Image 1 (cartoon, rainbow, N blue to C red):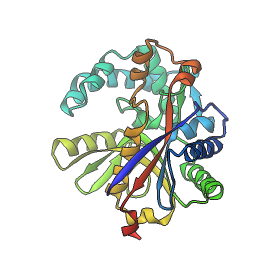
Image 2: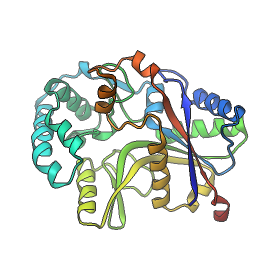
Image 3: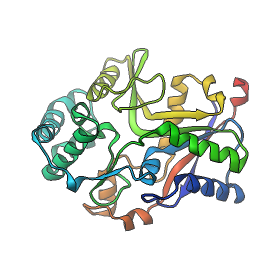
Length: 296
């Protein structure tokens, strides 16, 4: 593949904003300004957070009522992952550091939200549990995965086809990783596109890390939740689609991977809507494969 990735700026999207309209307006703006051209078979990649926030698929963690298993998961993550499993599985040093100093009250609430919405097997993961994310949402809110990623993707795909008269491939991705273990692909997310094993919770993360340690796989990068649109995407194998998804993820500006990055950058423990509105957001990425015509 000979790929180029172009991030597309949008406004900060709030609850109940129309994400489809924002996608169309942002693409039209960059087309009119001569920054991009979109052709049949190009890839449009959307961040799942952009979709979830628009669809008001948020929960307020201050409303959580922590129970036994939330406390268990806090100590499990801070001590077992922070001091034993994390180092053994070669987890990044900055993530291990964050685990060891995680705040008790906030973490317990977060773990309870994870248990309530996706289940204990996801809460046992040290971070990014079940796709429930704290970045790019204000205050004590957390973003869940889109309820129906395929339906959301089809809305955008159909709008692009109607408004821009172009037939693209539309992918919604989550930053949480997919891994390869021998010939299989696996994620710790509760949902993923066809060919990726999901719904296994923390086991997906452990198996993925073991694949890297034993040199029979390892990290592939961001996970496509759904792929719709132009049939050309069926000419790409899963390895290539994962590469495209990860290229889009790492092309977003600013490239931050966790709530800790945002808090450190803005020197605050609470991210407000005002801070988010002032930040640059590129939840849309256009990926062009210069050699795509050879696949037709």
